[in-house]
Image (tube, rainbow, N blue to C red; front, side):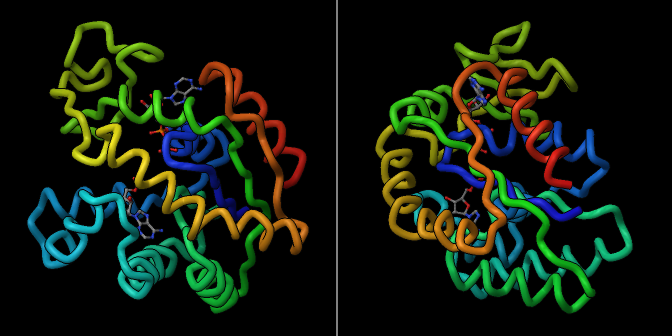
Length: 216
Ligand code: ADP
Ligand code: AMP
């Protein structure tokens, strides 16, 4: 089963993708996570991507398509993938179709988390991430037991450089212009399932698991 999880920045894609991937035995692929790791490691990819990410713009399609294409090839033979944050443009969506077809596969369902923009901004500006294991928290909605410390691995929490209010709003604008057209693209192909992204993490997960389970 191959799933795309869509929604604006701050919708809860990463939070839910980790859980869904575990529940359904899928490989979780997030270009944002891969790019942040590349920036941290100081690789050529990281150097290319950093300015785009810091300003909230999308990294060029060819870079992202090559990155995800490589991971999809490595994932062949597994139970499927859960794509979180890819595709974000129409060329990326077309490339995904091609890349899956190359290994005789297809996309099974696209879940679209729907929530008001102001909720997304509040979630983004309060997000904290573990520098060591990547687990994510929220200062109000999902705080760690000890402030600034990851519950899972004890690593230090930090605020992403693109989670300021200004950059969060810029990313939402980019989402509206470049990514939202994919909602109609996937609806026209009968793949889209809108899921209410408001409410607590467990509540949203219940809706998603039911939607994905029913679609499988
Ligand atoms: P995305 O990957 O879509 O950008 P995240 O999964 O990183 O979003 O979530 C953004 C922020 O919102 C994080 O701080 C996360 O802890 C918090 N969050 C995620 N889901 C919920 C929810 N259902 N209710 C409240 N806060 C949430
Ligand atoms: P995310 O972790 O999904 O919030 O992504 C963080 C940043 O990484 C984005 O603001 C973009 O700069 C970049 N990025 C992530 N996914 C993509 C993608 N599919 N296409 C282009 N840029 C991306």
